[in-house]
Structures are given as C-alpha cells and as structure tokens.
Image (cartoon, rainbow, N blue to C red; front, side, top):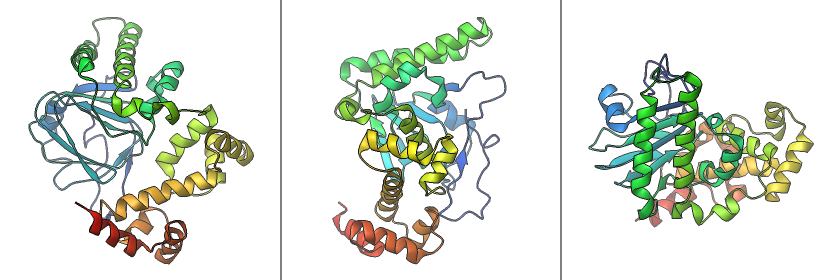
Length: 310
C-alpha cells in the first residue's frame, strides 16, 4: 500500500503549481510490481494522510479501485469523480490525483506498474490503459460479479506470499490481474472508443505517449523525448505521424494545452499558477501559447468555463 513513509509528503513550500511525481515503492517483502489491498484498509492505515490537507500528486503506476459498497470521491486531473458501487476508478500513470477524506467506500484496491503486464496483453489493453481513457468505468451488469470475485481471488493470492514458490505466486497474481483487466476492457466506456484508441500505436509511439504523460510539464521539445527514448528525433517524428498524422512537437503542445484547459476550467487555477505548472518561465509566454492555440486569453477561457458550468 502506498503510505507517506514511502512517498515523500509535500513540505509546505510547494505551491499549487507543483505536483510531485511518485514512483512505485511497495512494502518490504512485497515482490513484483503489483500490490493488492482494499480501499477500507487504505483509509484505516493512513490516519489523515493524504487528505488533510489535500495533497495532489502524480504516480508512475496505475491505481485501480473497485467500489463494492458506499461511495468514493476522488480527484483525477483536478476534476472530482464520484464512484458508486459496481463502478471502478482508474488513475493512470501521470494523472494528477487527490484523495478526499475517507467515506464509507469499500472494495479492492490495486496498484501496479505498467511493466507487470505481458507485452501481448498490454497491446490488447492499450485502449484501457491510455491516459485519455475514462477515469470511472461502469462494466456491463453481467461482468460485475465476475470482476468482484476475480479481484477477491487476486487479493487472496497476494496475501498468500510464502504459501507457494515465488515464481508460481507471481505468475498467479499476474494472470489474475490480466484476466480482470481484460474483462474490464469490455466496459461500454472503453469499447465505444476502443476501435481507434490503440490504432497504429507502434512501440516507439507507445513509449513516447507514456513518457509524454509523465513529463509534459518539464520536457517540451521533441529532442527531449528522443533522448529519453534512445532514438533520433526523425524516428520519433515518423512514429508519431504514422500513428496520429501529427508531429511529436504538435502532440507535446496538445498535451500541455489539454492540461491548461483542465486547470483553468474545472480546477479554477489562475494563469500564473498554470504557467508555472506547465514549465513556462514567463506567464506572458504562456498567455501567447494559449491564445495562439485557442484564440482566447487564459482569463477569457476561464470566465467562459465558469459561465457554462452547471
């Protein structure tokens, strides 16, 4: 379970524009990049951290919570999501998230690194694991009970460390996780976009998308990502164009613009905080970037969002 002893807390000097990035650090003795618990245990073990005061953060791994009882409220990309029984909350690597005070929610809580999935299964799950996929999933009614039982089996196997050989234990956990995710990928939320979400996504482009989601705040040039991925700018640009018809730099700008829209709208940050969050050294440069892509100043866009809010 992710606890504040293993992930640094913000020290008070961090302003609203700083969102720390946490890596996967399971408790001592937990093998492999997968950790399984329950949301009620998470609340019971953490006292007032990390919801008092709220501390937004990002992670390099997936959070997956299935709500079986009660109601869970959780911020994903600065939008408060409400998860009801039968629904699943998915926070993907790089998404900004923030916990709300504990409520009465109960259900399985899975943390796992992208590398846990076998390559073939990872390709099948591309529409589900993509950063633009829905944060709240509502499976088909026929799948609900099966998903819950599989999650309980996974929890039981996770707690059975030492009962079997370690390689068998890990293989069982991965098999159960992949079975659960493949069934969850059948959710209407995913199948409605699944025909295009992973289309043409080659290995270089897929790695670029993953890196972009984690680093778009601080890395802004195609050369930065080419160096990170160990390829040339030309190779990266070709992979991006083959997959999307757009260049790497255009995709980088689109991701920064998407974050700016989210923060100025639902999160109601001011332009100066958003500029700092996205790595602009001068708010004026951010203003030119935003208006150049939208035709609106950040202030005008925020005012329009506030007017259109229900």
